[in-house]
Image 1 (cartoon, helix red, strand yellow):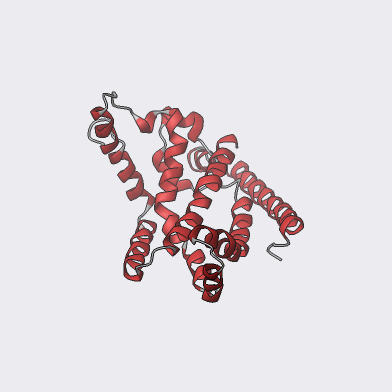
Image 2 (cartoon, rainbow, N blue to C red; image 1 turned 60 degrees about the horizontal axis):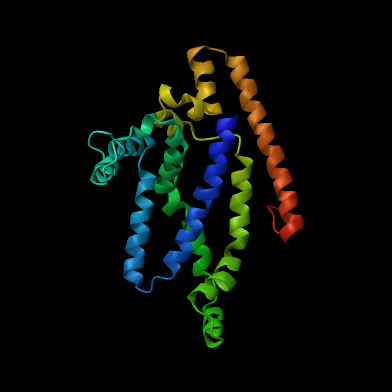
Length: 229
């Protein structure tokens, strides 16, 4: 439970905000041709399976031939076994999630930005607002309803986590920080055949997610007036 919540909080803090920042930065690219190419490239990792993504990260972080350790060698640092280090595992899985889904997750934000009235930007320019102030006072407020909706949905899933990402990137040396509810259920259900217990765990996850969704929605409505309903 602890590992599941901590990794999900990392995903919210970094993985959820990354597509927002990416959409804001991409919106400032003046060259439309380059902008479309960049957006298309950012979508591609989403279509890779987690088997491929985990393999890529194992190769990049390899202590023998990984590019990260090759760079560290230049600075006189001894090779690090990143995938077997408890202190690095959570950061690695969060970075992998960001790399795989940042472009795809930003699609909704791109659609919101494309619908913003350009006259608002023209008026802001006349008033002397630069790109940063335009993003803060025009683009970001226009994205706020979509951000609120996606954040509420993300909060409701804080007790669940993708099985493939964790299962393929973990190993016995990092079980202390990598063993989450989904991998625990896998061992109990498929390896030990404790079907009643795993069913109870799944039901509890769903109930907790429902309670979180309702609570977060009410809090959001009181603080900002925005919510799912």
